[in-house]
Image (tube, rainbow, N blue to C red; front, side, top):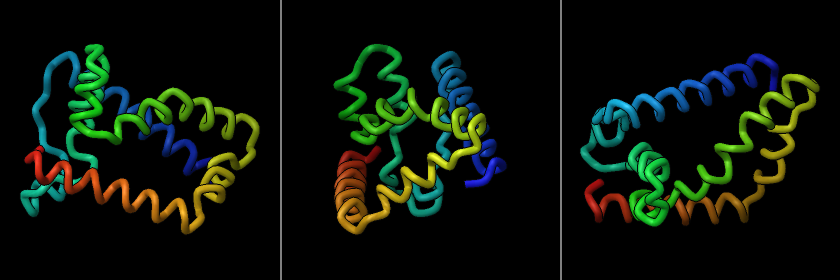
Length: 127
């Protein structure tokens, strides 16, 4: 990953954090999901903003019920900025190393099954 790509990811991370903070303060009800807008069905990521908001309110179980992907957010959100900043500071490509570890068929199958299940879960619940 290039420095430019790392800066872009860091910028996306910061914008995401700003979105979460603004949504928590102003309770913005805006549908951003292209799948939901175009086809009327939720994607596996639908409900993530509400799940993060529930986490901030201390409702962890409700957040998992809203979208089980929140568990990944609990893991990735705190460590992502450190990985990106370390990568920029040391000029070592940590994200490519992580990607190489996850770039195996077994992980792809697990992720596809999990996301497919979450997608069905969201469709059934009409998120």
